[in-house]
Length: 107
Image 1 (cartoon, rainbow, N blue to C red):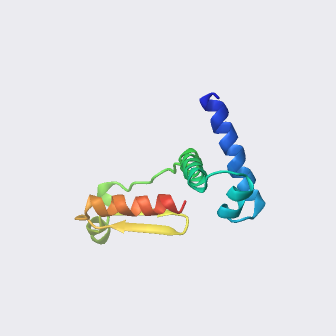
Image 2 (image 1 turned 90 degrees about the vertical axis):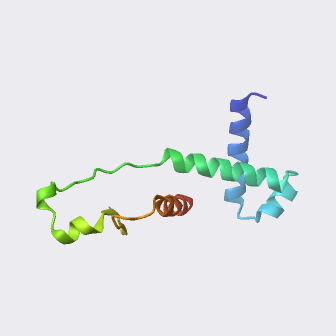
């Protein structure tokens, strides 16, 4: 079976599982499939769906001379819909990376 055909087959299986409203264990038993293999494909397809639905937004940056003293001290403020993240000037990049990983997992 070609890679594309295998991908299509597993996409259909995952869609059928999701529409069945059965637990993964029951669905896999009824369809004679390995639960761990289904979990692999569900995760793989979720990651690809998330990656393909990334939306970029425009960013407005105030000229330096228009910043108030308070804004200049805050570092960076990221706002998207109801989410706001403010990073101090001395934030640790690893913390931001961890936060983005968590947010990506909930997207």
